[in-house]
Length: 385
Image 1: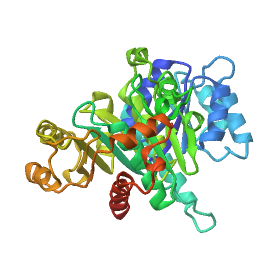
Image 2: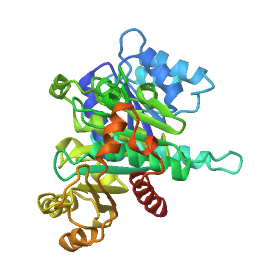
Image 3: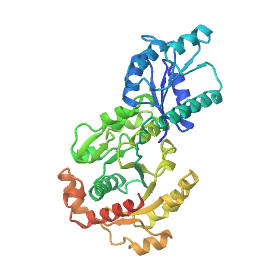
Image 4: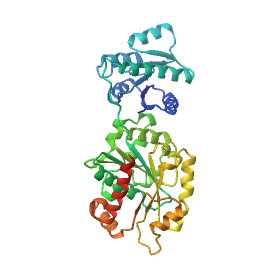
């Protein structure tokens, strides 16, 4: 699991710049813009290291460091003072307050990275000594990306029902997350009045998103099943978000459940560019029709070009509307040139009654052919895990 670094600075430009640099180095970032917020996040998030500015309103960095050292829950977290105050007296005060190291702004990124790596290495070595108990790293969940080869293939419905099948067949924690604000449908189909957790997270500064913040916006649908839902309000599509927002959310979700299913919408999005290579499995949902299949290879090649290994990309045939011209499984595989991971055949009546009853198809008729088909896909995923 990536080491978590808490950055504390009242300059939002510094927070964003340093956060992005460290994130590109593979670290997980949490940010605070003032001292009181830093103390709360230090205790809740348990970062591996704190990068702390000195000159802040309300509470300066010296006081923050002293309080962190005085709290048994945070007293062992390494602290690097990162500040423009470079006099000897300032450095002495920093060390006396509890800092492990001191860097003067501006600094070369290589120096910052080197000091962070050195302190984290010393901390890890000390923690693994014979006199200390070694804590078990938090297990990362299996990240499953769901992408429609075109709009309207039912990506969200397939994602939700597959999540239910995974929980049923594994009895493990599952999170289903919609990643497209303004076109969320799960909340509408379930009859929820408030279903905009994703939207609220995207309104925050990228590095202010924490695991606790995400937990607060997850909806408990059933035992073992939690949902991160997107609003269905069209205006939500106009709100700006960055790839870093989604990268932060995905990073934290990965430690919250055994299986995390991401509804990544149709085709590819630059916002999800950092996410595709992180997925253990990506399902490309295709309609069993000539038009649907024609788009599969182009999308598959685009994902490979963006760093996704071809062994992680699978075809899932999903059709919601009965059609006399629907291709058979063997015909689909012949045209794709690969074996289908799974196939869900049309069940329009079941889908209709599921919507009327505010229940997903998998739970409304658990003995149906549709439910068994989702079970088959889930069991194959479990064999991969």
